Image (cartoon, rainbow, N blue to C red):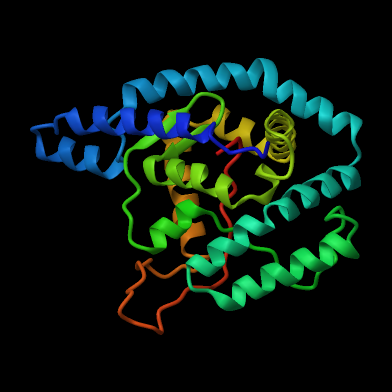
Length: 269
């Protein structure tokens, strides 16, 4: 029996609960406090801070030691191959979202990269395509369509997100062909294993950055919240530095693209 990625609906339930709770939260009466409240978009801050504190402990005693061991055991070229492999696995999801964002050129580039790296690059272990890589996901697609981000949420272990990106995370599983290729229990085990290894690999590439941010921030929670939101805006704009505007569906010439600097957010998203 083919696997159906139903696990993601649990995340939808969590997101809906969070949004209902957020909707019940009252705005501060003081104008300055109200402006800060709206700017941070974090009506669940007390709960989010508790989850963030748990995540820091989980990182300290589990994820960071695993990441350091991973870095110590696997040489740099091996870690690069693993990183290439995981990014190549995301290509079908990136391709679908390129199309949904009306970016045929970027979709073509994604398809070419996937074909070249999956064949000559031995399953994506080697990134030999001359085309520059990019990332897309359904959360970014929703943003390009004009959807608001919704309340900021910190998930246990998975880290920061928001209602729009959480819903997109679930939807992307339906676009991922690897969710369907095995029997249900095998696919679930593959999903969990892939998530853990990818998380450890990502953490190993950000050990120093993560530690510096945590050590030098007066309020690490606020710092990580700000960086996450900046990172997502940067990704939604496809790296462009000009102000972001959602697609105008009445304008057939609307599109995206661009280059620029990338803000690195350590830890899982």
